[in-house]
Length: 579
Image 1: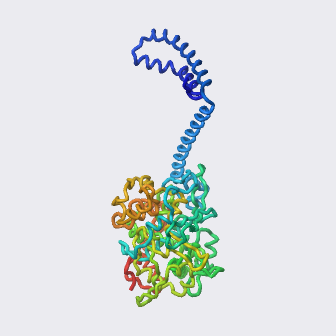
Image 2: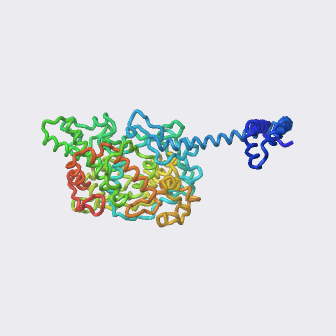
Image 3: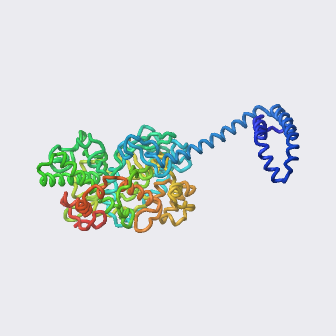
């Protein structure tokens, strides 16, 4: 006799018939047009026959079903139940990540934009196990993708005639809004066979980002600095750092006698953000805005001789921060996004979370890596280019900054055209090796790809669909930049595999902006939140006449006020830019 589920199913079926047979029988009887009285007469007899048959069948089933089959069916049922519950958990986690600050892991006793809060999720995480296991196990290795898609084919100018100052401002701004540190968990990047720079079979060092789990166990990466455009790169994200940077007199910041930043115990420069020494261009920007703060403070002190050090400092800080905000939305974003950037400001939006999103920090805002040139070329006061400085010599090298000087560096960044925004990265960033047997090795493209997998970011197509765009179904799709689809097809099996960072750069730009549609949505979402989610945004917090003054101040003005550099055009972000 055929088994019906180890005796469990037959018993369940019998109970269902006893409890619901009359109801369903009535329905069937009505459908068949049976006479109600006749049905009642037959019902009692039929139920008795059914019960007898059920007991017989149940006994036969239990007697004839092998124990192994019984265990197998139970195991299958439990696995199926487990799958259903895990799917439900993933759906709930996605809702939690989208609706709650920090992907559901934020400290609710603090503002979501405070230092130490997790990044926001614009798109639900896509970990391999739904919790923390890195995404991308079915994709080619990050270095393999880098070799196929990001290897440079030579210098190419960008569509907006943007100068190197454009991507430098992007980096300076980035260091005001997010910093995710790494922990001890290794996630090395394998070096594939045939690699022309690194030894095949070896690996590139990579550590996973620090994170905290939300109530459903999904890891959310931690932003250790304040997320607002609040000048934390100049003043720090905590009171202790701010205090350590102040002179204590006249509302000024500490500066050396030559108006450069103060040194730390290692003879590296100190500023509000710890990455100040990352390259000599970035050091120049930190120096520039520290000088601007002191210039404003000196003017306030002269106009208000009865003001305290604290009063002067606070007002100067507010004015410099307002300038950062204004340059970002009025000068930087129109080049990046096209048109007027974000559009008109209509005031703060209550409850709008301004925390940086994970897809922004780990993918969309890393576009500047593709615009960096292999060298930094200083320019003297007569407009003559000096000897080009290899990029590797510009990293963490305060001596190089001191030797070259801020004026020559800023002239060079303002006058040299940035590389095209595309999937390619110069060798200095993609095949970086310092001399020595144990020197650091770096592939920034592979690092970006690996970071996206570490953070559980979606693929390009998953992001497109989550943001309301159609998926790309072919590498020949015109949505890709010219030649990008072919390079992607050489390493990925399907467009569905394409990692988000490389996929965003592969998209063809829309309108007169530099970015494609998916990247544009992510960037606009974030910068709108940074503006409209900040009640202290300059256009909301300052008097109208001060707002007008701030908005009439360009980056070129800041440079001219605090250096001996003359800027020929209205903006330092477009070439040519100096006289």
